[in-house]
Image (cartoon, rainbow, N blue to C red; front, top):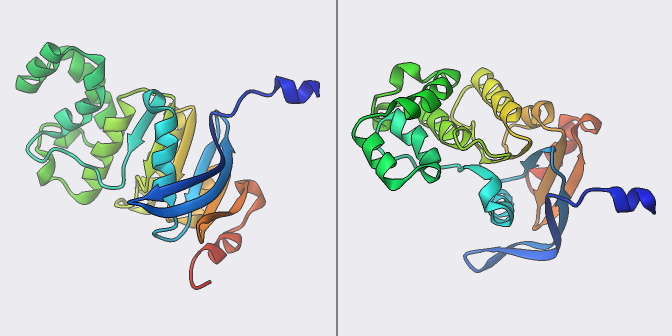
Length: 227
């Protein structure tokens, strides 16, 4: 009993809950807990509920979450610099943000430039993001999340538009800079190598939940294809 009492409370928790999207039940009778410090991959077909679950997780701790959506949602007419900086808007006054929009301020450059270098975007820093490739735009979106310096990173297919080598490096960077990481991923091998826990979604339920070191790729293929 003592060990149970000393266990920390879960960071995220659902107990027999129903999650909906546009009025349609996506996940039913969901019971799930995730502890601080875990690296979790959400696996399943398109429409299985990964994005819906990420949204519900985000709602539990909005002030602690750095969010990286599937669609980058960048502002096309602004530079890579300004799009990354947008992640830090809440940390500064309106006046500071407006001045930085007109001309990048030294403090903002000090915050943004190292992130851009880590992401391989230093040469595109002052190019408008509508001139970037899809992979570069996705890296800018990751940068917008990294600059927030929050303990939890939630990503919905955050590296889908970059090659495998770049994807692994980006995911390692994300894991290094966040205490807790939860990712919707489509690459099974990537999920097994980067994350410590795999949650598989299918048919509106959690079909699989296990440590990644106890799984092989073949254990996850049943989450895809016909029932």
